[in-house]
Image 1 (cartoon, rainbow, N blue to C red):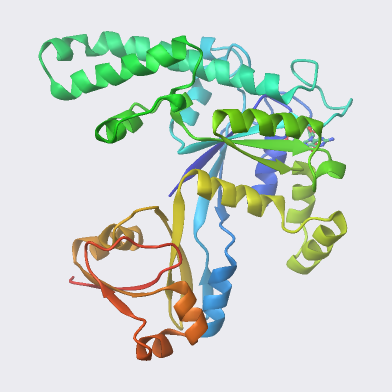
Image 2: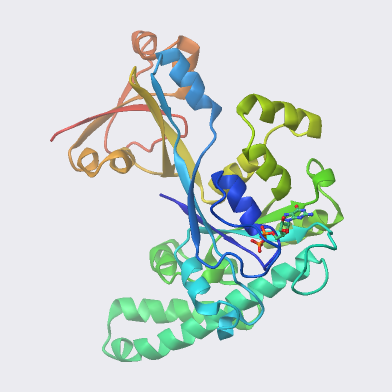
Length: 364
Ligand code: GDP
C-alpha cells in the first residue's frame, strides 16, 4: 500500500488531523509539544463515488474501498537533524513513506502555543525543510564514505549511486531540496532507492481556523504561492472541523458541510490530493458478492495490476477482461457491456486505465 507521512512543527494540528483521518481518538491531541511520541499509523478508505455506482448496478453485497496509509510523525523541530527533539527516530519514519503531508499552522489562537512564538506558515515550512535537507546532507556524507571502496573496485551500481549522491549533494548545498533535481529515466529507480527525505513529493496542508475553512485565509494564500513556486501541491483544511465531521454520521456530515459552505469534506480533498501527488489510479473488480477498488501507480501493466490482488494472479496471468467505467455505467453492467462489444480481452502488454473494471483470468 501507499504511505503518507504527516509532518509539521509541534502544535500545528497534526494529531487533530490524523484523528479526523482515521476517526479514532488513538492519536491524542493536546496542547503540548511532543504529545504524539509513537508514530501513529492509520488506514483510510479512499473516497470514490464511482465504486458506489458500480456496486449499485451490479447489486454487489459488499463495497470495499481501496485504502491509503497515514503515519503521524511528530517531534520534528528545529535541530531535529542534530538529534534534538525526538530527532533521528522521526527522520527514519519519514524515510519509509512515499510522500509527505506537511501540516502548516494557518490559524491564530492565543491558547495554543506556537513553538517559534509566532504564526508564519512559510517560515515554518522552511524550518522543517531545512532540517530535512541537513539530515539528507549528513546521510549522503556518510554514504559517500561507505561507498568509496566499492567504487574503487569498479562496482557499477556503486558508481551510479555515487554519481547520484553527488548530484543530490550539489543541489542541497545550493539550498535546494533533492526533489528539484531532474533525474534521467535510467537513474530513476536508483534515485528512489536513495530514499532521500527531500526527494519525497510534498503536499502542504494549511490548517486554517473554522471561519476560513471554505475559502482559506491570508496565511494559506502565502502557502499556495510558495507551493506553486516549488511545484508542490497545497490544500486548505480546518483540522478541528474535520475532526468534528468525522464524528458525525453521513447525513449529519452532509448537512454540516452545507452549513459551512463546503462542497465536500476537506479530508476527501486531502486524500485525493495525495492520490494525485503520488500519481495513483484506481481500478475496480465488480461482482454480485463485492465491488472493490484497487490502487495502482499510473502506467501499471495488467499483470502487475493483478498482482495487487494476489501474487498468483500476476504469476499465472492470462488476460484481463476489461470494461471501461463509462461503458459499464452507460450500458448498465457487465452483461450488456459484453453484448455491446465493450468487453475487451487485454493481454500482458495492456496498461490499465483509471476506472477500468477488470476481471482477471489466470493459471494456478
Ligand atoms: P500537533 O502537535 O501538531 O499534533 O498538534 P495537535 O493536533 O495536538 O494540536 C495542538 C493544539 O492545537 C490542540 O490543542 C488542538 O486542539 C489545537 N488545534 C488544532 N487545530 C486547530 C485549529 O484549526 N484551530 C484552533 N484554534 N486550534 C487547533
